[in-house]
Picture 1 (cartoon, rainbow, N blue to C red):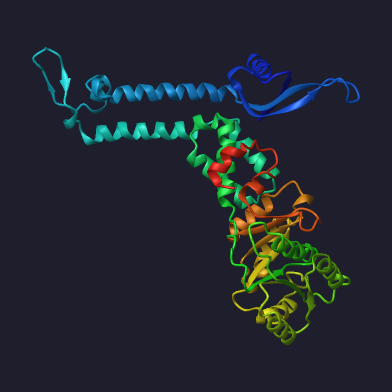
Picture 2: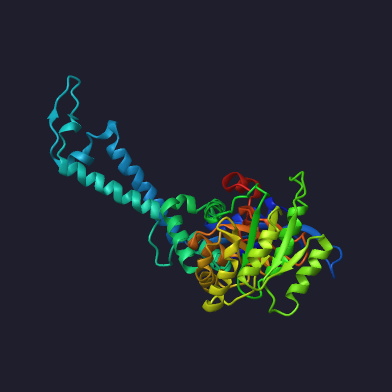
Length: 416
């Protein structure tokens, strides 16, 4: 596939350059505003840069041939031309009569079924050819290769890319593929539709929230962010009574870190080490609106300790909301394994942490779609509570690398 990049002082100027240089072969992919010229950052001027791909001559020629063939077949089967040599020659079975005007006419209702099946078969084959696009020794339509490159660039899993490309080929005609902007919009929309979002629970009474996950994903800071969000919630006229409990008494500084956050926010912090202690603390906090529980970081392969932690958390009850924290920097295969190994907790959704540490999020979108797990929150820094947001489809779509995203249009398609 051939790519091109052209620059100029205006969008119109660059498009004219592209048309003059490449003609109808050029398909525009993306455009952006840039700074041109200057020296050491001085005396620059505004400009536009456009990138795109070039269709090969064989594809364009074959496409025109197919359109011509399509028109020919349609004219053969139109009501005013059924009596011409096309179908009568193909079937030889029409009943010929001489009307009063002296013109030969063929009654189409008596044409043999074999003859009609032959024509219909040819029409279907032609339709399939036009939809799929012309065969070429140089590969598929350039837009297919370009969109697959973008999906790979964003670290989507092999299975996700395979399914997405299959959908592109089955739902977009060859003519639609010529408009790469349209192809991008449809693919981004389909990606957005694959993102599940955990519903916001308005009930702020007797709420128990437990955060689980592997070591090093930032659970303690995330618990503090969640607690801060709840007491600073502008939509809640009454400030809820909040407590934090930690069972992470093994990692050096973990308890002290949470207590520091608690002192700043004026939220008491308790520490428990056994199932009985957890039961007593929860009974003591029975009238508290929201209790956040921070857990010990465990490797997803540490089955024994995961089982013991599950037993310790049992007093939280079946109504507790469990969230699995996963770092956005984790590769797809590890995300899949983490989701599976923590499944015994029957967690409600995912909290995606460290979104600020990566530019590619196809890995998390791919696996969450595969595992059918909704996203509840995203975090993107150490700030408490500034660097946390409730999950939304648009929040992730904005992080896609290389895609040209029409934000307002996409909001209409996939929501916030």
